Length: 211
Image 1: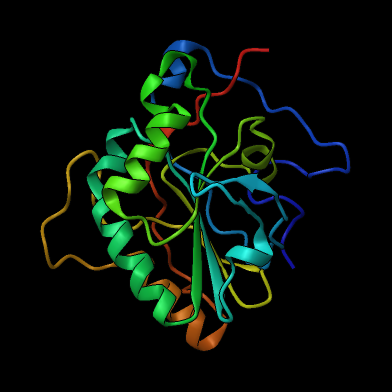
Image 2: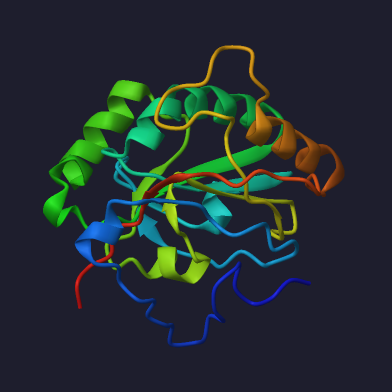
């Protein structure tokens, strides 16, 4: 069993506050920590752009769940979003559910507003719920670091993958590159365990609210 929080700090009954980066730091590219195998997924109840509320129970598939912290404005997300749509659709056929969570403070990033979330999900025909973490409590609970940040859980909701989608960065990687996330979650669906060797994702830092 991994630590009570994937790569940062323990999550208590009340919660915790992580340091909020200043504006200069907020624009920096960041990478999540390595996978904390066995960390138990934390439940949530968040509103989706489809007008429904979504939780672990509603999002999970019989063979696992992919939790994705994304946003609209980040170039790292934009570079892979069409592949995220492709891969999550294929993972659904393997019994792995997916959900995308937007936790950014949209104050300085209007492209991450609720209305923009609705428009993006519609335009891209997301095959997964796109939900808003307005309080940022879920991002803090999961220790989300950047967008995109991927958390792949097995059927027991234990973390088995926290790596990149593929080798794309701010530019989309060429066609034919290894589909790291898809192959890892396919393995999770079939065996319950993720690959031991994983390459961390990279992206724009979460835009935390000033407190």
